[in-house]
Each structure stands twice: as structure tokens, then as C-alpha cells.
Length: 389
Image (cartoon, rainbow, N blue to C red; front, side, top):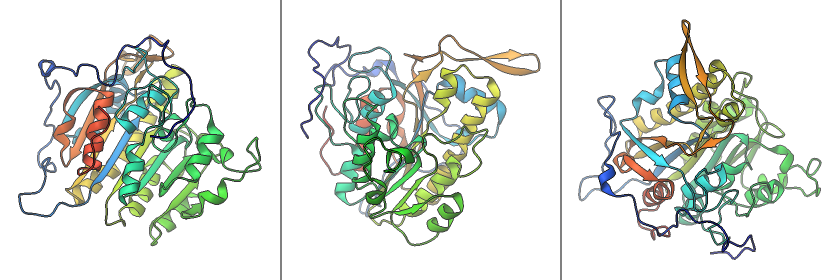
């Protein structure tokens, strides 16, 4: 662990502790659904065969609950979401709050440890934890982060940085630029560019040390078809446009490029993709059409990953949310649909979890967010030490 001075934790009200009682098996795997035939196997190779390197693709659809997915499905009944054979539920509460923020939840996915709101890659004692992405890089695997927000936003940052407050964007950018992450794609150029940073430091230069820098979708496509093993693209000063205004690159195009680059590593890879803006629309209680468009933008990227998994039966694709936003429901509205909201913030609702590919069955049932993080780590680093329990 890396010692980092941070906020004291002794006076925080603790709802869960990382070593608290696990959810009992009596809660049962509620939503193990076999939705399609001919899916990829979920077990390991037969005895005596060499294991393929881990290929793990984790999608985090920020703020996305059952109603948001329903909106997407009603807008497009042919969603790739139907292709997941395994479904579960995630309890997203953190170490101190019934309602989590993205930082605490993503940190639990990244480290297998519950922490407090606004914490990035830090435990409940404000000490930095090694993330699954850092462990994968140390093992020699390729790693990648993709988001439609700024790349230094809470969810992607939790896999590659360590600060006690998610708002420390310039520090997060400095840590990311110096990190071993091979692929960084999204928005957030203002936090790396010396002409835009408040401190004037240049973190665009180190961002390009071992990564080919691109600035457009055309460059992204051409580089993805070359032999580069590192890639960095910051396509907006802050967040990228919303899906209904985002022309290119789309989340699917960034995911395609990331997979093309990461697939070149014979030791396997871990790719984390955040569909960032479903959450933002729900915070603003936006109408059905706008939310559905953002959900379908995520689903298009998920299709890219599922198609990849069809070609690589050893690959694992997981789709989760960090929390639900809006207390959202889908309601009839004449011949169409509308979204009903009970909140402009996050809720404590359970969120759905989907999995396909190698060992997907591990993600069935009702799980706590930190437990999901430990299951991911066990797949990415099968011969490594277990995450902190």
C-alpha cells in the first residue's frame, strides 16, 4: 500500500466494513437468465489444456438502473443486451453511506474494498490501494480506459489514480499520464494541456511517451489498424458531447480501437469502458428519447465487446452500473413512453449486472459491489493474491 495523507475516518458512520458479513446464499441467484442459445462457455479449459491469457472487458454504465435499460430496449428491441446469458444484482452501498457516489463505487470495483464517497483508489483509512488495473499492468498485461466523460472523472480515475477527493482533476491527470495504462480514450484534454491547466504543467508530453496520440476519429481508426501498442486520445477539453450530438468518435468506435490495440498483447488485457452520461441525463430528469439515445450508445459499444468475445471464447465481458440515478421508472405516454423520476440524485436501488464469456456464471446472484471487484480481480489475476477481504 502507498501511504497518502487524507481525511480521518474514525468519526464516519460505518454501514458496511470490508470484512463485514457476506450476503448469505439464501438470497439466491435471483436473475440467472439463459436468454439465448449458443453462448460462449462459462467454464475454464478442459484439464490438461493450457489456459489462454485473461481478456476482460468491464463496462460501467454510470447511473444506469433497470428503468434506463428498459428505455433503451423499448427504443430498440434488438439491443445487444439480450445476448448476455447471465444476470445478477449489485448492492452499491459503501462503507459509510447508504447512497454511493461514482468514486466510492468504482473504487470498490477496482480494488475489492468498500470506501467512502469521493475517494479515488483509496481505502476507508485513506491509504491508497493497488487497483486491479495496476496489478494487471505489473503482471505484464495490457490495460485500457475509455469514457465519454473526461478521462479523469471519478469512474475511470478510480482504476488508475489515488486521491482522497475526486475533484482533484489535475492531480489525477498527472498520475494517469505517468501510469502504465496503455490506452486512454475520452475527454479531458484541459487537465493535461499546459495551456489549459491552472498550474501550467505539461502532462500531454508524458501522455504520449509510450502511447500514440490521436486527435480525431480518422486518426483513431488508422492507428487502431497499425501495430501500435499504446494509444491516447482526448477528444474534448472536458466531457465529450452527449450521444444525440456526439458524431465521432462514438463510444463504440473508441471501444473498437482500444480492443484492436490491447489484443496485440500476448499476456492478455483488462479494458474498462464507462458510458458516463446516462447518469448526467438522469440527474437532470431528461426525457425518454435523450436517455434512450445514451443507453443505445452504450449498447453499441457492448455489441463490439460481445462480438469480440464470440471470436475469443476465453474473453469475459461484464456490464454493471456504479449506482442508480433518478429513482427512474418507465411509464406509458399515449402511444409512446416517458420516464418518471423521484429524484435528481443517486438512489440506493440495486443495479443490474450482466456477464458473458469465460466464467460469466461467477457474476450471477446478488452481490455487494466490493465482492464484484474481488471476482473481477480473480479473473484478471487468477494466480495472484486475493484482493483484501
